[in-house]
Length: 273
Image 1: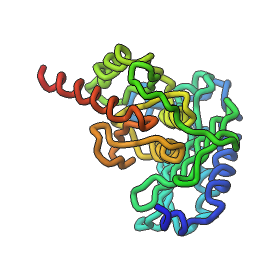
Image 2: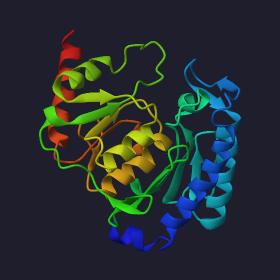
Image 3: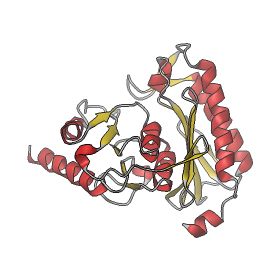
Image 4: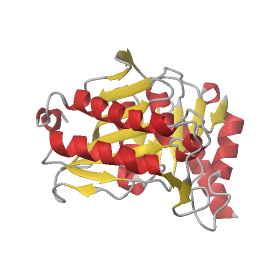
């Protein structure tokens, strides 16, 4: 990882923060105005003109500052060398449903993955006034102040978050896991933004977050935040984390094995049905 970081522009985090904040300014132009929405893949999977406008801003900034990097955006952007070892995964508006209804829980999420590893993450929540930023191995911050994961060591004392994926034909996806965590922790929150869920783990406000059936732009930035803040990320079954799989368990590290064991118990019960 040290060699990877050495190859990057030393101002990479600052440049990514400026990029995310510029996109956030675009989002604030539409927040609270009930913008028109279009359906993407499911009735609850929406897109607005502000998703697209914010992505345009991000791509313009990143392609100018990092011309040798590839950029992959949720709204279809594919820019830069396709074989680059450095890939920016961009979610210009994570939490579109919240945004469309005027709720403040949405964010711009930028994640730089190098050789498959999350290295830099920025999650900017413009309506909340929070900017989470990090480089793995160099710490994590919220609005410039250092942050780190919690030290809670017992699963029953942990607060978790999750989401429910847009999976056709599986309306109850994740409900067994949700129920298990509700009954074995302090509770489970449903924020509606994977990027913010991960940022909250990095900030020490949540002990963990799990989800499946997501996209790399949902996870790359937040995963870098958790790692930089001292936490742990893996596949939902304990394997090596790869944002492209769309599956993640992120915790403060201390609770990771306990959370994995609970997920494994649920999986075993599902297979026995």
